[in-house]
Image: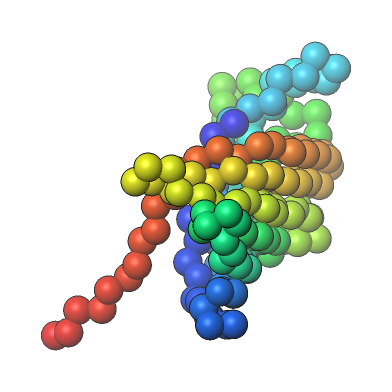
Length: 171
């Protein structure tokens, strides 16, 4: 599964800029497949969707043993999107070889695809970079075209942090 997400947030600084709250929106695209030998009709299931979600971030700056740390919690809940899904009993051979399209691109809402993404991390300096360690919980569910899907991810996040700032250029 390959997942790409992009979010834009507006920040509010509180407590002398130690606490920062951000609100905004996030778009997430996933493409990949699941192979499950317990499925009788289609052991390999393609996964393709695009979701749009409101998003919020809370981050707090602390110092531990004179090391600056940033504690961060991020949450998003997709409200609307689109998803590829075969109908119940429809094979991929029918869709792609026979051309039997049967409403395989379906709109999704919070009711048909209730999902939830959260991330709890800590950022700390290492040499001239910032490293992020933490937990990622990604709950993805859907019930479209008479097929139910549940993909629960609980993972460890290890990464390098790069911050981008939008700069307004005067005309």
